Length: 281
Ligand code: FAD
Image 1 (cartoon, rainbow, N blue to C red):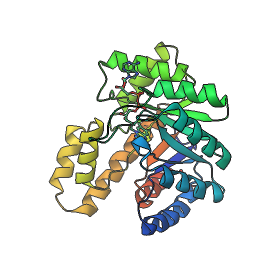
Image 2: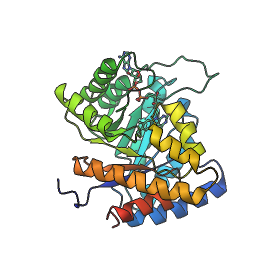
Image 3: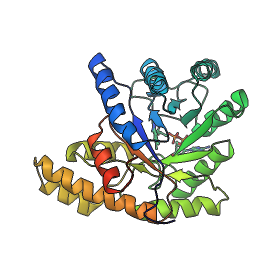
Image 4: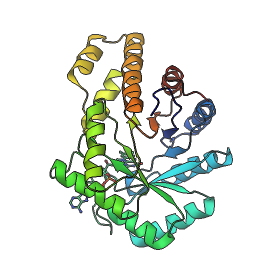
């Protein structure tokens, strides 16, 4: 692929918890629409904890004339609740889902009729045929609970064979892990687009916290540089922009089919990155 060619972009939000958050997200969305995203996705709290907020944000995006994907996690859910949620999403005009297992917050009882995302994907296909484009999650640096790297690759292949159309990865800062993952799943006969999830770097502490929880590795050189900036947020942001721009350029040059930005409901860093990458409009 020509490294200067335009590749599609999508952006991810989480459902705000307060009326102020809803208004702020409305403004952020308008700013990000300048990037002409292929779609905007909205996360879904495991156990259905954010269902109302997720569906509301998805409805707002659709009403603004932009394609929206609802994340959908199945841990703790029953067939009956999933069937009802799918019917709601279909009636709203949603055409795209990000189908996940999810992680139950501690203290939440297990239960539920789904154990893995592959079961959710199979159920969605069984119930709704080809009504939805289904995305699944991919982990180039291996899902933290996987029994082994190989079993994680097999689990990914199983999800795709159950009916997923494409995948979005957990964020990473090591492009080799992504390219290796794409080669490994291709060797298993899995050829769906695997879109890198890109986390802009804007705060050192936030990034460390997320990465500890998600198993995404911060390479030592990035971690040390970030630590050396202390509270100097301007330097953290400038460094973060350089690092993530370089990552995106390598991914694009290596054939990544699109870029999916974890915006954290902020517009500035994603827009700055896309401007540098020539992906505005
Ligand atoms: P699965 O694909 O089911 O995999 C979970 C684990 O089980 C893996 O370790 C896998 O190797 C293993 N496994 C799978 N199948 C089998 C099997 N048959 N036998 C044994 N082991 C198996 N979380 C949310 O709560 N809400 C969101 O909106 C959300 N959005 C996300 C978006 C993206 C792009 C990504 C990358 C993650 C997102 N997450 C979200 C986090 C996700 O829910 C967690 O990472 C969760 O722990 C795994 O979900 P999964 O769908 O990848 O699970």
